[in-house]
Amino acid sequence: MARKRLIVIGGDAAGMSAAAKARREDPELEIVVFERGRYTSYSACGLPYYIAGVVEESGELISRSPEEFRGKYDIDARIRHEVVAIEPVAGRVRVLNRETQKEFGEPYDHLLIATGALPYCPQLTGSDARGIFGLSTMESGLVVRRALDEEKPSRAVIVGGGYIGLEMAEALIRRGLKVSLVQRGPQVMGTLDPDMGAIVSEALRKLGVELFLGESLTGFEVRDGRVRAVATDQRTLPAEMVILGMGVRPRTALAGAAGIPLGVKGAIRVNSRLQTEVEGIWAAGDCAESFHLVSRRPFYVALGTVANKQGMVAGINLAGGYATFPGVVGTAVTKVCQYEVARTGLQEEEIEAIGLRCAAAVITSKTRAGYYPGAGEITVKMLAEKGGGRLLGAQIVGEEGAAKRIDVLATALHTGLSAADIVHLDLSYAPPYSPVWDPVQIAARQVLKGV
Image (cartoon, rainbow, N blue to C red; front, side):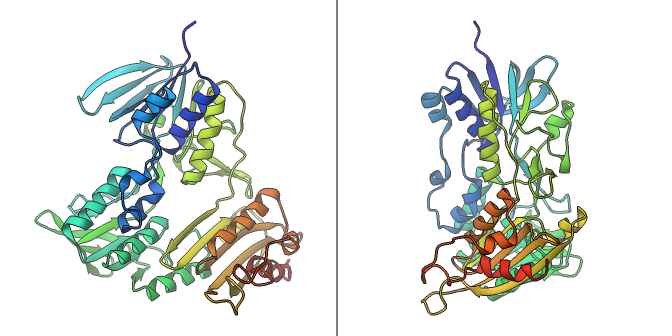
């Protein structure tokens, strides 16, 4: 009997997680992975820390090489191979060897699309100049680090105040650059409510980052092929390096061209098993939809944690097993120098959009007992449903020890706990780690007054 053949498009988090899991579940399955870049199974989330010099060697970010996948797991991982077309009726993909520029066809029994996300790059005059960088792949991270090491720029402008923007602000501050950040909206971190985003903005200013909020990028000034300045609708900012951190969108042009239905924000529509609406084709990771457990609606988020979990679930199903991906609550953390930022669940405007009424509370406390050395400030915002007190979302901004407290609240969202339930959780206490009343429980007590 001929071996069943699985083809995976994309060799990073979701794709290789699925391939490895499918191999463990079915040793007889033939698995071929096509990756358009030069690297497989690497930590894109670690790139800002490699650029900063916190992680010294790029190899530390690579979990497994193509050679390891072939030799240890019998997975035929082919780098520099780009799938350029999916032919669902024929059960075949068209593949371009980017080294030889030759194109060929490959049949499949099952196909997993794990093409990831694309960084948003505006088509403006000068956007292709040297010194302007996006950051989404291993190759792009290596290029930025090399530019810093060899060209030694002194002034940088970051466009976009999301996760990548904040993490790159820290990286460039560590490298000794003067950093400016341009954000189209009135605050950095649009995934936070405005009052919490304002705290992050103030923290950035304390670190020496020049913030230009409410300004839109209009173009770049270029001389001799190299960027010299960033132009907004209000000013011109000198720049020797520009980092574009304006968000990402799912890389789904290939799926769309093949007639595979797309959903929220253009991500591939999948069911709880990660199946698309086309027989034999599955999708996982930053190109695929998720399901939000609080809003109970399809949702899109590009996070390595979600990609790995979806890949694991897809791998079980592709090998003939049965698994489902229950969904997400939108949990994320980041930091810029000593300041930590975390969020989970819904924002106020998202709660309003789905027709719920909520109470909100914001408290400021300490990360440790106030008398214990190193106690830093922490601000917690909690959102609970009026009438019953069900937790709907939370946000945290603070110093060391603040951000990971969000995991308590993410767990509460997964299990449907109320603010009252959180008050009575038996959380750990010792002066080096928390006040007697943990800040998340102080916030829960406060929000109960409004429900």
